[in-house]
Structure formats: C-alpha cells, structure tokens
Image 1 (tube, one colour):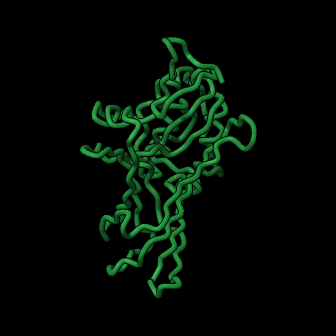
Image 2 (cartoon, rainbow, N blue to C red):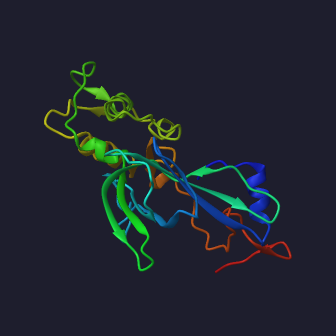
Length: 233
C-alpha cells in the first residue's frame, strides 16, 4: 500500500469524493480524462490460489484520442490517480510504470482518431540472461537481487530487503534468466516479485500479508464501526 498524504485521507473520508485519472507519456505529454476513453492495469500474482516463486509482469490497456505528437517506440507510460471533492484535490498517486508493447490506430463512429495501447511493466526486462561483472560465484540472496535490479535498470523497493533476512546462498545462475532467478529467490521467502507502483523491484511475501479478518472496511482499509463495534461480513 502506498503512503498518502493527510489531505488524501481527509478527502477520502468524505462520502462525496471521486477519483480522477491522468496518463503521462514520457516525451509526449500529460493526458487527462478529456483525452482518455479508458485505462486499466492488471496483475495476476495469484492464479486462483496462493502461488509462490513467481516474478509477474503487470499489464496496461489504454484507449485515448490520438495525440498530435508522435509517440516513440517503447515509450514510458505513467498512469496516476488523485481523489477529489467539491473543493479539494489530492496529490497525484502513481499507478505503475509501463512500456508500450503494441499500439493500434482506429476511428470511432464520430470520425475521431483513436489510439489503443497495450503495454507491460519493467518485469519483462528480467527475461534477459543473468550477467554480472561483480558476481562470479556463489552470492547471498540480497546481493543477487541487487545485481538483477541493476541489470534491469530499476531500483529495489524499500520494502524488499527487510523481508530477506536469511542470507540464503544463491549459486551462480549460468544459463538462467533474471526472471527465473527472481522466482527462485521469491520461493525461498514464500512470495513473488513484482514491479511496484513507483517502478521498483519488490518482493511480496505471503508471510508479510495482514491477517484476514472479514471485517467490513473502507477505501483506506480501516474497519467500519457501528457504535464502536467492527462489522463482520
């Protein structure tokens, strides 16, 4: 869960709030809801049941008015959301960092030029074979994750290393992709690797997930109470 400001939380507590979306395309511009028809992201870390040992890529789908400026190959997409009420708007909250994979230009019934985009996050950069100038033999799990993140060109999320406390030994992964090695390390910690909403490599462990309570909660994850009593669902 991302850290949000007191202003964000205050607006969210107002029942008359709504969310706004924008999309930043690096080198092209920022597009708001007047140019966007739809935008969605999806990640399937669990396939119907708890799964460990994965390194999952997140996808994005965008439908928008065709921009006047050309969009470079593999352009970076940065979707963001904010919460608003009648008088206030919160800060923009990142919802991932993606790279264009495919694009299609069409026209709708009104004759408008429509651009449809499909993309993935940086996890696909882990499909390359592992290589390091500094790791030439056995290493610790933390050293290996740092080396893979450097090879992918991403930072490691601050929440990752505090989970990796056992200093497992990782043999030199000759002939393995970075993604395969990440899955191997993730399995050691009963979890999986993802790319966070801010574009960083993050380990998510089942051992770090909050206990399921079946309490009715609000958009912030806080329990809704009636007369001070939490509500079971």
